[in-house]
Length: 430
Image (tube, rainbow, N blue to C red; front, side, top):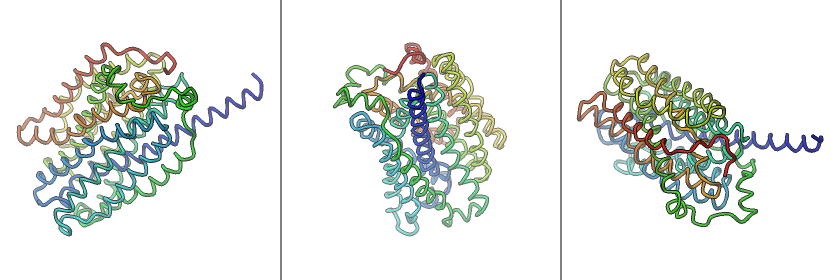
């Protein structure tokens, strides 16, 4: 190999690494923004809703939490299509800006005691804005990482999307836990919780600057050069690739449901019904998310060697078996039980949410829309409503194993979808 060729190859590898880092850092920042609402739901419920009953306030907070998920399909349609028509990089900058702006506004929003019913109304609108941004981030950032990855390391590199999602959410929970230790639950009620939301501004600024400085993906540039862009990717998807969307829906729904049940609902349930303290519960959950992040990269790397299907099928089987006993384990109310349950379920979730396997399912002209729309629908209909459904199962039906059973049922549907899923690890991106 000539020195010029070697230099060009090194420059390409360096640009690829920069692009992946920019996408991952921005991804972590976005999910930090999105997560701090869930981690502080017990406080937010009392600040923004007209009730002093913690269970009622928590149900209202979870309903608002679900709002962000319900609008995700709209964000996926909007930003996913823009990613396929105008480019991945342009969308990545816009979604970080939108997420950071909405989160900062939550920090500045007066509570119910100050502005009455306007407080929960505006909060719902801001959560909707976060949902739009998350709908675009889920698909476009993953595609950006995947299309910049070396073909032999697509699984590992794409897994950093899941890992940095967990890191961002874990950081949000850790910040909430530290604030609880510093100011106590009473201090958080009086306004110190807003610090966690105000951190969105500098994190968002860093994400925007990093993403502005990277180039478009080679695959999208090739599409644009060869005039192979699709004007109506949603119509194309639904007409010719509906089965791929439905299979992907089942897989993401199972992973999203398990994640929101064990990392959002369970910690808040431990606080509201078992007398757990906010700070320790959040820090334990943040530690379990660290396990999920490590597992995601390790399983992504393994999928590069043995294939996507064995890793994802094995992880889905674990998600079928583990959640029911782990949901019953958390009833004990101890922090150790919570960590064990979250860590075991987290490893399974890390394998189920295989970004590479999902992204490789769609051709380049439809990849951004396909992944964004599939993820947006699954997280909206199943994942986002999970905390509220789980809350109803344990409070109204008095079924402690209900949340785990719900996850197991969804995992069984994912296994059915995997039966017809092709192996995509060892072929070039189409």
